[in-house]
Length: 368
Image 1 (tube, rainbow, N blue to C red):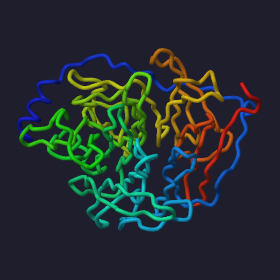
Image 2 (image 1 turned 45 degrees about the vertical axis):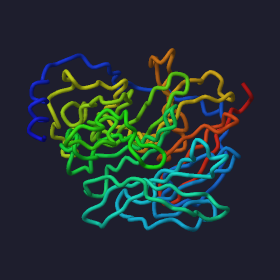
Image 3 (image 1 turned 60 degrees about the vertical axis):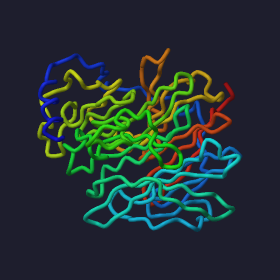
């Protein structure tokens, strides 16, 4: 199967024009237009915040804690490097079933990967903990992806990284490295997945050719699945992900290796999807949200991208789905930003990264 796949890739080496906006100097949102409140301080390497239908929040910390409390009942978690307890998301029917989903690392220091777990939130503990999916093969401790989203049909999307040292595997449809997978909420494989039933392929695959997707959001207006993706030195991307398509890593990219060597001579090739937006140099996009609130009324439909290296949140302006500009929010804080979510009242909930992270709430200085 690998030889057939390589032959197909060789046949596809035809240049096409990428739909990419380069990273230009970006204006900052005037900090006097919003107010930042600290909701929770003293978090250790926080990774994700989820908002429950009743307004409660859950926060994951990479070393293996689920807050507030911390909650009891978590399954075993491998913690090392960039690996640990990562994303958390409520079931679309949480109000009636109290189910949540978690992504976490499993394995050993030399061989690990990400897995998906479902549990029932029962007061201050988790019960009925079930492992739904474990990505294979095991690799190193970085580029693990691990964000969760639900499509409009309530199937579950989980992002996975290329394992860093095995990036060529992102083009191999027999494994999960560098892929986005789609599952039913019980962990079974939807029969209409693009590779389901094909010999020699991983049936969970929804799309392939990704490096490290750590941001994912579903546009409820259109159903589009949008992701933010880490490149190496540059080549960070926003992609519009569709079933069965290949997003090119490592055969096409605008980024360079950490050694400054060229990853590939190609920015675009026929048969591979170009990004909607690319950032070079890298901003390190660690999440993604689509603003759908009322407090910042002029932002509706815009993308919000928390950035670790850039130490800000990028507001990516859109009109009718087309990217029209960008600006920086919270750059004055000088904090690595790990996650951003939109609260029910339209406020932004922002997680800062690191050993002393915080959950911040951002609202307009005056109502708009």
